[in-house]
Length: 366
Ligand code: G6P
Image 1 (cartoon, rainbow, N blue to C red):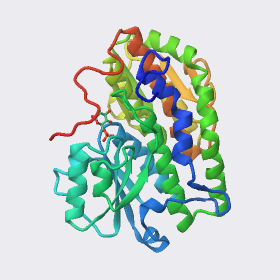
Image 2: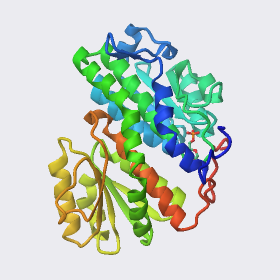
Image 3: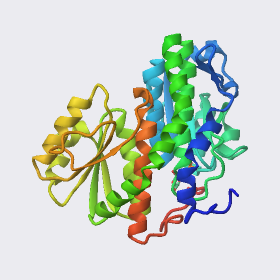
């Protein structure tokens, strides 16, 4: 059943809809309610070792890199360890400084992406510690790392990543919870996160039920040549992945910017012909985000908000609502409507959904 579309028109649609079940598998056996933490024996790190790292560097390519961006924020938020994501393809060519008190985490659905594997080899050669967050069991990257965790997302056939992206973000929430609970995350905060993780599959089901509404918006926006995606802090890696999905699937030009940076350059592009998709969760940055929407509206740009509540209709013409979670986990849910949006924009334009032109599922050559 993994290798047919199971009644869906495309693998992509099937894989989008599989996400609640895929996340359950990523979580399975890993949440510890009693101590409000995550059990991740595969990391092969003692509590002492997990405490001693001073920094985390996350490496991956494409969607794996964007998922790493969500992961870096989760680790900083929950474990208060400085964390940063970088494209593995850049890292390996810039003679990076490898530090013994940095934990390196390689992210890959296939486990075979050559740039990511080369980065792992370079870190290993220089004595660094590398963990893998990988979907494919026994793959080259999984084997090259000293430990890690498998996503258990199941086979992903469509070239464009959906369930593996979401499961990677969930895997990072588990890693962040695990590191947090050997650092300063309180049992109460640990419980808050474990409970919110358990609730994710059902919340994703609710987003999937909104598919027809999202599809009708996608068909309208697909008439534009270009779209701007914006988000702040937690919303930014989600916006980047949203833009990536739209580019890959529909071939519509899309650019993702931190909402805070709009006024430092790209605001010059905004006008009636360039709509904006804004990721606006109800978090501590809501007011800042609403003021960015005001700046866009002042230039007659059409706005589609993805968030928890509908802003004033003067600020956003279109809204897709997602269920609330804990703020740290918001990016996981905010990403789902953008997958559906890109899928339906591509359908409207008659694109080759499961095999976009010029792309390969995994790039195993230099
Ligand atoms: C290719 C695919 C992307 C994917 C990237 C990383 O470029 O087209 O969709 O995100 O590789 O793949 P990986 O298997 O390492 O996650």
